[in-house]
Each structure stands twice: as structure tokens, then as C-alpha cells.
Length: 187
Image 1 (cartoon, rainbow, N blue to C red):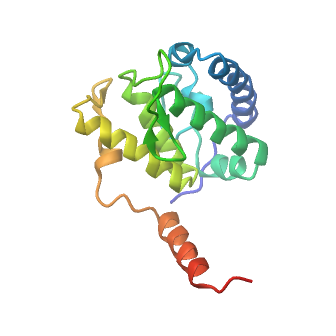
Image 2: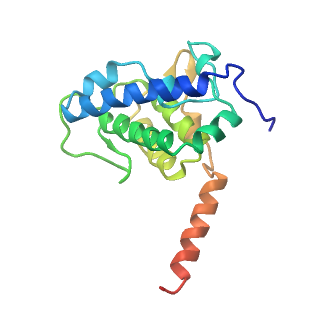
Image 3: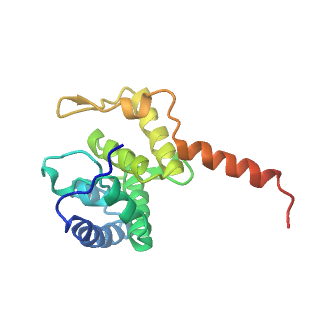
């Protein structure tokens, strides 16, 4: 893979700045159970950056060097994961327990916006967040099984979730570490 960086050298700082502002809104809105307000906002580009051009042209596109730089930023990654968690909660999905939340508040449901779920999943995959990607994938597959459309702007986005096998190199490594840790005697 060719090593690339967004030619706009300010994009990393712009992503961090917009992410921090949006996360504050997420936290306030989730605390007030204003789930619909989260759904109605526009934030995908900087909250869950991907390597694809969007309606904002290449402004928010991240490449492998940009991703590597962001991954090294503990504050960014903490905020990133908190944003993913809250976006999933807005759909009524418990990211960390990989299940639907039984008692949901008003507006805490799927909004028939597959592009947002696609961007979150694609971003998780790019950033190497294996467990979280697999949880979001599980949610997407449950929606696909319910016959929810994954077509957006003339594209079928379901392939990210239905491709077999969904193995990521990091998943194999994570499973290997887990197996090794389980086999090691307690200290």
C-alpha cells in the first residue's frame, strides 16, 4: 500500500477540533436523552474519519499516515471511542456488550441512515478497532436480516458487513494474544 497523507496539512487539527466540539454535544444530548438531536446532527466526517471522499470533497479524507498520527494521540482515540459508543447508543446498540438495549428512550433507534453506520464501521476498521468493528458489524447484520436497506446515494453499502470472511489481521493477533494469556499460569 502506498503511504499517503492528506495534502491539507491542517486536516488533523481540524478533525480534532471538530471532534472535541461534537463530542461535548453528544455527551450533553445523551445525558438529556436527546437521541434524535444526535441523529439529526452532521458529524460523520470528523467524528469517524474514513479514506473516502464524501460530499465535503477531500477535506476530511484521512490516509494511512493521517490515521497513524491520530492513533498515537491518546486524547483523540479516547474521544473517538466515546463518540462511537454514544452514536451506537443513539441507535439503541450497546457497543461493548454487542447487543440491543432492551429499555430504550424515545428516539433511541435505527434511523435508516446506512451511510452513517457504514462510515463508523469503515473508520473502526481503518483505525484497527477490531472488537468495536465486529460489534458494529453484528448490529449491521441484524439490520440486514430484518431487511433494512443498506443502499445510500446509489451504492449498496452492505458488502462491508457481509463480506466473508470478515477477518482482519488485528483480529487474528488479538485472538492469539487472548489464547496465550488464557493458557499462561496466573502470576
